[in-house]
Amino acid sequence: MKAVLKHTTQLSSYLTFNGNCREAMTFYATCLGGQLKFQTIGESPLAKKMPAKMKECILHASLTNGNIVIMATDCVREEGLIKGNAVSLCLNCSSEEEIKDVFKKLTTGGKANHPLKNTFWNALFGDVTDKYGNNWLLNYNRQ
Image 1 (cartoon, rainbow, N blue to C red):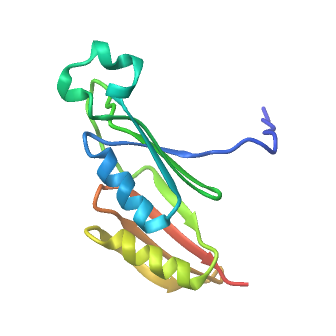
Image 2: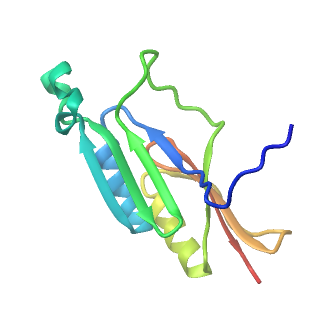
């Protein structure tokens, strides 16, 4: 069966943290720029049902910069936070300067799995696991 998506359909990433969502999203904002918003559990209708220590946890965060949208939370499912390598955030950069700058920032405290290199598909490409355990694929298509 073939699904047809409307032009207004957008896919965004949603990351889950375990108490360090504010720190991580602030770090991503320093790497990518944009507008960062937070809502804590204490600012929500859930506040009355939660223990006091949970009220400072992030219920929802969003970082928006043009077409970049990253959302996140500190709300972890009952089984706990399980980090894996099945998902990566792919950032298609608009210039060589931008990809080099973002790559450098994301590797701070993290690991460059593959340094930026020219590829056979005529792009500058590299990948990083940041200090929060999230995988990033960075790509700049050369014209």
